[in-house]
Length: 215
Ligand code: ADP
Ligand code: AMP
Image (cartoon, rainbow, N blue to C red; front, side, top):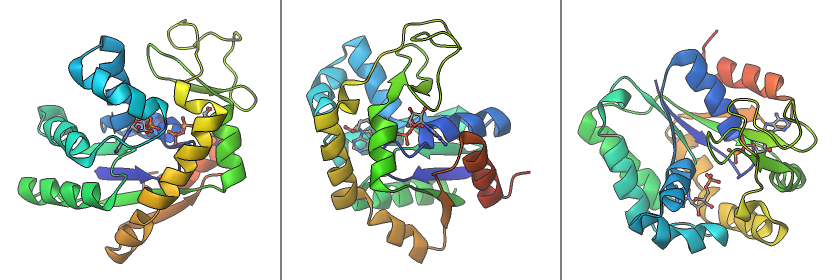
């Protein structure tokens, strides 16, 4: 299966992507996670993208496409992939079409996580993340077993710099200006599967599996 998870930041894409990847074995490819790993490793790319990410703006299309093209050329994604947080612009979506055509492996589904602004703001501002394994938590809805500590790897949780209030507002604006038009783009291609993202993790998971036709 070749999948795209589309929707506003904080809609729960990463949370569900981990579930789907765990159940189906399809590799989870998150451009945000890839860029954060570069920042943590202090690479040249990491240094270039850090301030853009901290401000909640988008990394340039050519940089993103280069990273994704290289990732989708690896052997582990020959049988499928789950793209989370990519594409985010029309240029990226067309670039992905080009990669898929070149590989002769078209997309199967684009799952659109539909969530209103208020919920997006509350999900993002309450998010806590594990800097080591990336597992997301929430201060109210998805607490770790021990406060401030990752259940999976026992690392101390952090609040991402781009989850602070000023940046959250900008990220939502950027989504509306640059990413939301992809909903129509994929609807016209008959790939769009809308899932209401305001239920519990279990309810949203059921919606995602139903949309994908996975039991
Ligand atoms: P995205 O990958 O779309 O940016 P995340 O998966 O990181 O979003 O989720 C954003 C925040 O919302 C996290 O704090 C996560 O724990 C929380 N969250 C995700 N799904 C749900 C849900 N169905 N109900 C409540 N909180 C959720
Ligand atoms: P995410 O983890 O998906 O919320 O992404 C975090 C940040 O990484 C974004 O706010 C952007 O700065 C950058 N980023 C991730 N994916 C992309 C993308 N497809 N296009 C541009 N910037 C991206």
